Length: 211
Image (cartoon, rainbow, N blue to C red):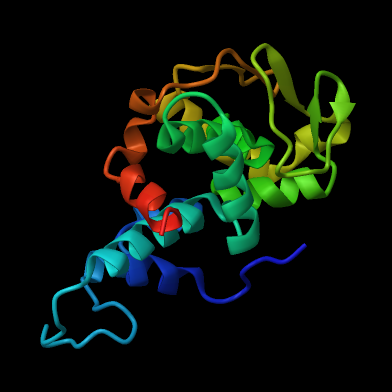
């Protein structure tokens, strides 16, 4: 499975936004975004020309793709599925991305970043309805129970990540039992529920793929 293996902080600098790719480091003073460093390849004196409509649409697509940690081919397949669904394409895309198992594991506070959640899934530390699932792109359904399996409950990285639950809880479409290390995907979220990504302009992404 292809995945990005370069320096992830460079991706945040490219988008000039915290993509939360390194968990707690993104919340610390070590985050390069806090230092207001220019994006890679960008003129530090701000002499770059005005970005075209295509350029803005591309950046919005790249931003969302990088937040969820998905490669281009898979992201475009998700968009095609969203396009075929009834309803608003941009909202459909968001809902499907939120239903990915690696994202749900991250949202349930079992991991401090989506990349860490992806590794937990790949290495067999996560089950869905009592059955071990090792496919990060697996789409969970309402009322599915997601849990940490067996001896994996002793993993320090999971225990450390769960500390965030005491600070900020979980999203309203999720339910978590932190002591049992299990949670439930209650219902598919609406676009308006995904408040931490409210600044993403999904219509630009739709326009990008419509060209």
